[in-house]
Image 1 (cartoon, helix red, strand yellow):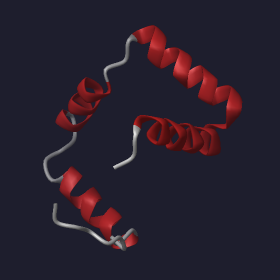
Image 2 (cartoon, helix red, strand yellow):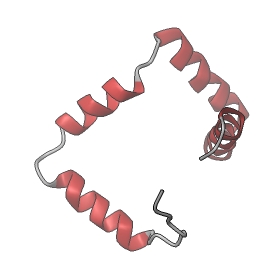
Image 3 (spheres, rainbow, N blue to C red):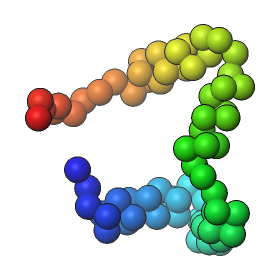
Length: 74
C-alpha cells in the first residue's frame, strides 16, 4: 500500500496528465473551497444510476482492463 506521499504524488501526476497544470490547480482550489466530500458525491452519483447500470459498466471496464497484478492474500 502506498504511503501518503506516494499517493499524493500519484494523484497529482494523474491530474496533471489529464487536466494540465492550470485545470489541476483550479480543481484543487474548488475541492478545498467547497469542502468537497468525495464519498458523499459518489454515493449520490451511484444512487441516481439506473438499476444494473453500474454492474454493466463495471463488467465492460473489466473486459477492457483485465487484472494483471500479483494479488496476495494478507
